[in-house]
Image (cartoon, rainbow, N blue to C red; front, side, top):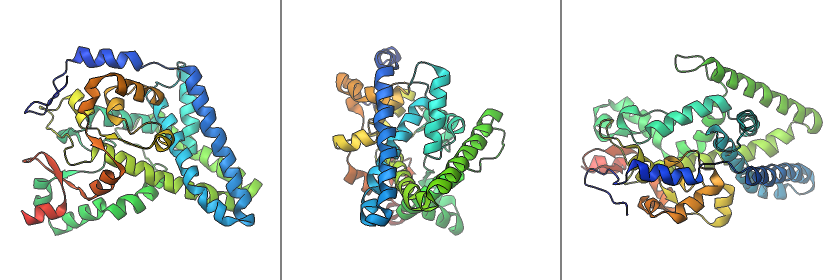
Length: 339
């Protein structure tokens, strides 16, 4: 049904995709509450088990870091859906849940909601980069930089920087968001309140269970979860045929479906990641709850236009770093040097 024209604009009427989105963009209290329960209860139980085994069998604690990180990713997805006001039908309850899950994942809810909305409104737009996306420059912009500028960008885009330093930046940078023209008072308060809640939670944990509860249980899980989140976000928009256009040529539906990947994951991994691998569906309909994304994808041929990704392809994509406007592809640094 949907095909790409030479201009790369998806041939689909606005009325068609908005009608599809409308079928699924509604809250389901029963499913949402059950998802909160089957995420936060296991998370609490797993943290308790990790702490218990620190002295009894520390290797068990180490093994539990991965599922703990997975549950934190799932917790983040709940916060993410709350930021789109799509999770619960009651705005105040929705926002309260978003704040709590934001504290658990070290994310200031109101500030992140604004940044993420800008990302949705500008993803794939070459003239509106810098809103919640992975820093990306064009080949021409890279070649126009001096040696120092190129080195900084190469370090920034190196896979080790993204996957090892990136999680630390993600966890710490959101703690110190200052006032700016783009930051409203409500968003600034969100950062402060989140920091206060995090400080209170850490203090209580240390008083009740000692510093190891934070240093050897929570932080390892959060670090791995942040690394997984960075990789997930990366592969959702950073792949060879990723959609990028100047603002005058940019099209929302095309950017959403062909500029967002369909990451095919094992059902267990899809559960932990809240089906966010179906990112093309999410971008065309941000208000579709995560537990409806698969249903929407399966029932409409429009979504087959999305680029398919696997874990292996996603790992290889970490080497892509520059957008070549001539070939309309993301390329590696070595491809530019060889040209």
